[in-house]
Image 1: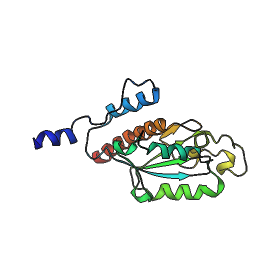
Image 2: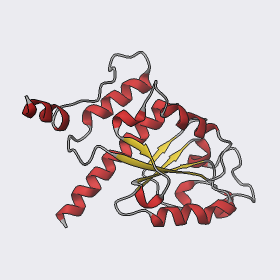
Image 3: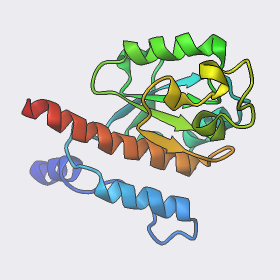
Length: 184
């Protein structure tokens, strides 16, 4: 009895999301969960969010990602207050001049392996303020011009399921980086 319980916890696929949902974003999350490694240590993703100058639309969707309907914590996604505890940096909005240093320092405070997710059109392209004097790196405002980005989640704003899928993708990238680090 105990052995079967432990196997179901640590070995078997335990994340249940409908693969037959009419919503393509939910189907994408279900597919990513099936591809996810079954290691007991690679299933937890700790996220530090940095608002680089957004209009707060992506942050509202992040709040919905933690709501009972989506419940990202059941998939091991946790938001943390300190970058020293984070695996993933979730950057939103175009990078403002005044937030560039904070974004870089947050990224540098994270332990290896680490990854960055650019969420929303502002973080991915600098839109709608691209070319403005107030944006970092000669007005581009893109997060990838300041720190290396592993996954981009376009949308204005992206849905909670799109955010969840992006974080799960970066979790798989981090798992691969951890395996490579173990080989060295």
